[in-house]
Length: 293
Image (cartoon, rainbow, N blue to C red):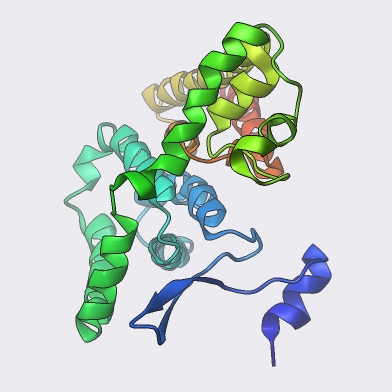
């Protein structure tokens, strides 16, 4: 039974299936999960949000809390899927987001609540790799290849920016017009630049890029307000601080991770990002209401 055909295609209305990255030795296929996204790189970048938002919340849960174990299992599963996507942009974003969390949660890094799930992932991954060492070394070399041929598709799109700033600097070419104007270069009528920032500059110009930058700064300010309210609640001993501050830090890290991952991808044009942005903006409102109470 093809579960994609039975369960997924009725939802997405398109033919879907697991991504095949290639084959090692011509026979051993390399699979990359894509879930509902249709692209393993999209999945890898989108997964950084639940990973980074839930991790600090999990670390701050009281021992014996009914959600402690389910969250640990969920985080282990999400991290395994993240690794299985082989998404370089996703892992780059996750690493940057983890650095944001490392400072406020550094005292948790040596505790069993953090080390046990991470150790479980490391042991499982190590066991799978050792069982098929040559296979995984070949895949790893392919995904870390820094040759010009491998890297050029991600960097060449930035060469379009100076041309647009000379010809259409203020408003760009218009939304979704990158593929139309550059089909003669890319050879594809549906090619989007592998960078959210290139797409923003080329299609909306200086005006659109500035407006989006203001929007992102506003989101950071809203999350900063939520963190300050969390500190105020903590100062008066309100237990709700153990929920608001972790979520605010997690969302801050997730926003940083998504911004970094989109240097070479375009997932910030998808609905999921604006759902996340709405929740991030609303957090300060919810926190302020809790503080008034």
